[in-house]
Image 1 (spheres, rainbow, N blue to C red):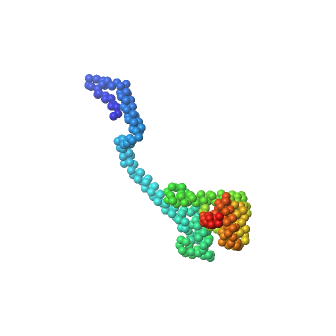
Image 2: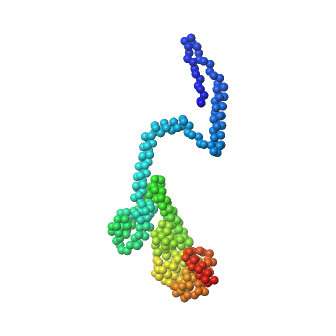
Image 3: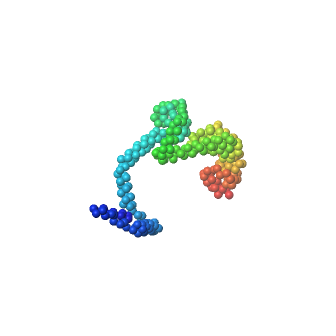
Length: 324
C-alpha cells in the first residue's frame, strides 16, 4: 500500500493549531523498506525459470480499458480508413497484373487491344501467331501486333509495391522480375565489354526463355556464336547444336560438327557426349564406331567443364559398363 498521507486536524475555536506530524525520518524508512521488498519480489520472479508470468496490475488494466473506451471512435475510424485504403490499393494493383503471367508487370507494354502486358510474355505469345492480325489473348478480339512501352505505369506499380498493401505473392514475383532485369542488364554490359561467359549466359537465357526474357532463337544464336568465337566451351557446343537443328540460323551439319568438335577440344563435356553418341549410333554423318564411342565417352567423364545433362551421363555410364 502507498504510504498514508498525514492528516491535519482542523483548528479549534479556541485557536488550537494542527496535530504534530509523524516522524518524517521513520516514514521514509518504511517507504524504502516497502520499495526494497517489492524489488526483491520482482527479481525473484524474473530469476525463476518456471515462474508464471505476472498478471497485468489492476491499475494498468483499468488504464487500458479507460484509454480504449475514450478513444474507441478514433481508433475505429483509423482502422476503417486503413482497410478502405488497403482494399483500394489492392484493386488498383489487380489492374496491373499481366493477363498471361498473372503477375505484376515489370516491363509494361500496351497492346492494340488496349490492355497492359508483360513485354516478354506478350512478345513470346505473338511469335506463335502468324500474320499481322491476331486475336487478343484476353478479349479474343482482332488486334495488330504493335506494342507501345508504358514506362509511367512501371513507376505506379513500383509505388504500389512499396506501399506494403499488395498481395505478398505478387510482390515477391515482382521483386524477382526486378532482380532478373538487373542481372540481364549486367550481363549485357559485360557482353558489350567482350566477356565471352556473359555472352554465353545471355544465349542460354534467350534460348530457354529464362531471366525474364522471351525465347528468341535468333538472339540466342547470335550470342552463342560470338561467345564461341571468343573461346567459351558451353557456348561453342550450343552454337554447333543450333547449326545442326537450324535454331535461329539456317541448318548446316558441317558447321555444327565443326563447332561441337571445337568445343570438345576446349573441354566441353556435352560436346564429347554428342560426338560419342554420334559414333555410337551413326548419326550426323558418322559411321558406327564402338571403339571411338568408347574413347569419347571416357573423355567425357574426365571433362572439367560439366555442361552436359543427366540423360547423356546415364547413356555414357551404360555404354562404358558394356564397353570397358
